[in-house]
Amino acid sequence: MPEAMRIRAVEKDGLVDVRVQIRHDMESGSRKDEAGEPIPAWYITQFEVEVAGRTVFAAQLGPGVSRHPLLQFRVHDARKGQAVVARWEDSRGETREDRGVIE
Amino acid sequence: MLCTALASSGALATQAGLMLRRAFLPEALDKVLADIGAADAEPSSAITLRLPDVAEDGTAVQMSLATTLPAQRAVVLVRKNRIPLVAEFEFAPGTLPFVATRIKMAEDSEVLALVQANGRWFAASRMVKVTLGGCGG
Image 1: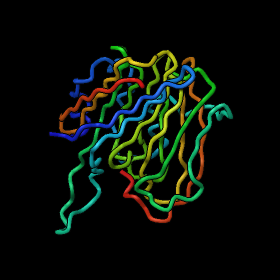
Image 2: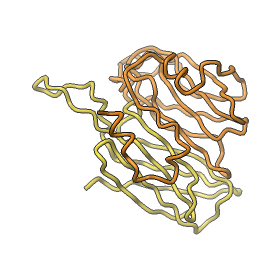
Image 3: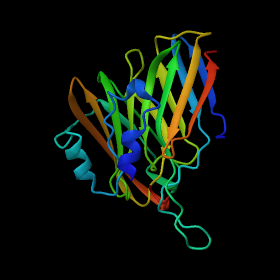
Image 4: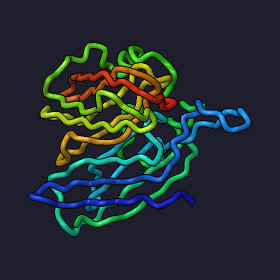
């Protein structure tokens, strides 16, 4: 079971700053383990965030995004108390969905 | 295999029709630009690409991009990485064309930010020196 994302969405002066911290190794496929064997690629491919049921931000990620990706973006038509849902899917087809609230 | 995996992944279907769905492959950056139709992207001072001049740790280089153009989409590429395409971002109406994240850089390289606005591609780039390479994907 993948680890939960940390979602922080804070409204200030009508602008909502959203930060999502994902727990994922984002293996590039070009590293080797201690025995010299290649470590297979394994990374998040799709990421999206909904606010109040509407997709506001989406990304297609590759193995060039750092381990434990942190994504930040800003939404201006959202308000305090609205639900935030973040989802990802990785290159093995695993998925994770977490929820937050705009503060 | 990678292409197959990407093409068949449909769990996040809401944006599937909009994303470029470009596979992340080891290839030359110019080929990626040609494939996504951005070979003639126009350099634009309306794009702000923030990166350190020198990155001590190539496994996590902080970057942000923002633009005053009415952009729906942005793409980030690292020219010298084995897989130059790093990520593609989509901004819904009501979301500012801004994103910040951390990227891997294998060595000193140009980093490119492309944004698509009104169907046209615009570009900005910065050189980043990397002290300790990050196995750049």
